[in-house]
Image (cartoon, rainbow, N blue to C red; front, side):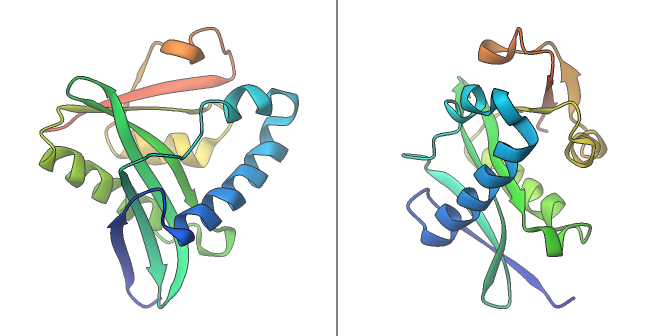
Length: 152
């Protein structure tokens, strides 16, 4: 594969909006009846810190961070299109988000994903995210897993 380029942008980026639409379609199938609950917490308006990954000129992945609490960012809207999975793109996106968070003087990142989304859980655990008690709106959601990484 040729080089993957990652740009920093915001939630008004047309390629990000397109990728999130694909992500939402994927999650609607995965989450089934529970999707409406999760969709309510995945709005993308006004996200200031978004990255989009490109292969040549094609958008192939995205992710975002948004303020969760003082000094903590929440990783949101991580997605790689199916034909580009397994090539390290999600790891590059996550690393860029963490770099950006450090530049913003953030000390930790948190996130929520589905327990059954093993590829995602594996990515985060290999990236030194540790399982924490489910937070906020996910506290009572048995299918969710929440993770945290202290940024050095």
